[in-house]
Length: 492
Image 1 (tube, helix red, strand yellow):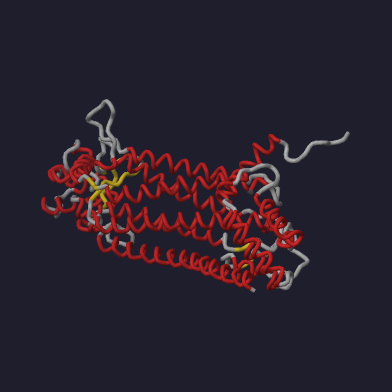
Image 2: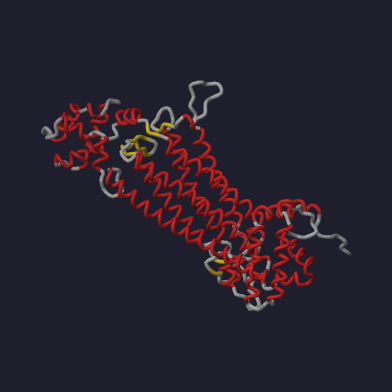
């Protein structure tokens, strides 16, 4: 049977090749230009191409770059993809010499280099957004270091702490998430170029020089792994997912705190929406958007990682164009969360009246009464706990500070004698201010302990900024160096 069909099949063209071509136009064209320039510089420096041939190819690349409006290109099927379009233009201008640029490389190593370059830009931008959020939260935590809130466990009022202390916990997680993301960005920092299809090349290429010209820390060593081990993808998206999984938990707290029944978080008018029918409603809708965008981002990260599941350890389309491009949506939705949360949380305030109401109604300072009885009355913790529990049960929603007479009776019954504690000492022991002030151990909410913690968070943040700056400076220097070396080829 004779096969008279020609490539590409129209349906394959419309469903696969054309969308991929559009994606390359949007995401990779500038990176392909960088790879072409760097590869040409390396080929000439390594003596694989002569300087005169290198000059001709450089001038042709420059002419293509100048004359081609990438955004206006439409996929026709004449060339399989954007790579072959550029090569065809080179051959149109130079004849057979136009094919020399592809010496000692493959679309395999080019693709994974393109993907890493596109990901490192997006990931570094997201890391910057996280660090900006962290800075805003540190500033807010300092302002709110003495602002009392009710802390909840198992959905119930538990103990008093401060808004600054709560934000400190959030900052710690953000710094750890940022460190994980920074480590994942570091894992993008080794260049696949020179791996070619699988096994490198018989030509005397300089893989380290290629890595330097493209802003990588160095070459990724094993050539098979360059095109097969896509852990740079799975590692990065796993790190991104954790950011929004963790932020989603905080965002859920914001929804709970701003409910009418709890009411300890006040969301300003600029960040609430009204009901179209119920005039009394103040709907903190941005919280819902942050929550669902966080979940959407987690899902998009899972989509990328799960697409790699049970795939062969080899070059494969499952880790390439369409999957890579689909994953970029995670940076878009996640970036929106980070921007909105950076504006939202610093703008919110704590409703002190509602905090006091819930503190009194739930007797959340009772733990300090029990602790005080251990320290000042010489009771065991279990004895003091039982006395305090009796007092709390007897109050029926009245403020704990009003329960001194109940306390006297419970103490007398439990111990057979009167306490040394008088009514003033009782009120001090049961006040939320005392509760917070006495929790001055490392990591506690007392002002000095919280201040020390915030100082450490700022140091951690400074280290993360330094790492990020080092990477971006390396890429910026490589871009300048490549432009200079390519210009030298043009003029030689």
